[in-house]
Length: 163
Image 1 (cartoon, helix red, strand yellow):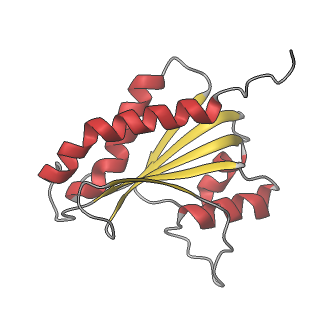
Image 2 (image 1 turned 180 degrees about the vertical axis):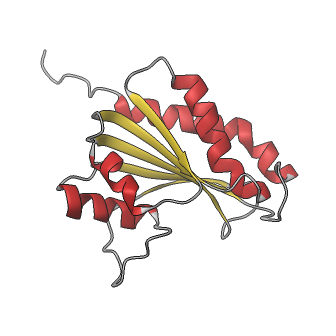
């Protein structure tokens, strides 16, 4: 079944049973609540990014990937551009990064969104427990604001240059 074209796909991943790793699905839930009535947005959350998501990505004009980061400071919120990067030989079938998913969408479906960003929150703990560390909990308000500002800018129509 072919997915409906979407102006902006919000694609989160994480494991809600691994403390701060659950921030991606939590933010996806927040985005779903915030944008549920706006047909420009589609929100998906998965425990891992898998090759099957390439079709949803190919059907989107823009994509915001959302995840935690184990390499940035705990609670640090980062927004970065993502571009397609070739998939490694012997494609990993259980987990792909944002760049590899874009490349797979392009390779399999002939399209990858021109606007692709990655929003991450630095993890303090990936222990087996539900909830968030104090650092991630404290970062949630600014992360939600940045997520909202980012996706609204991704779907904003460029101003007309005609007078």
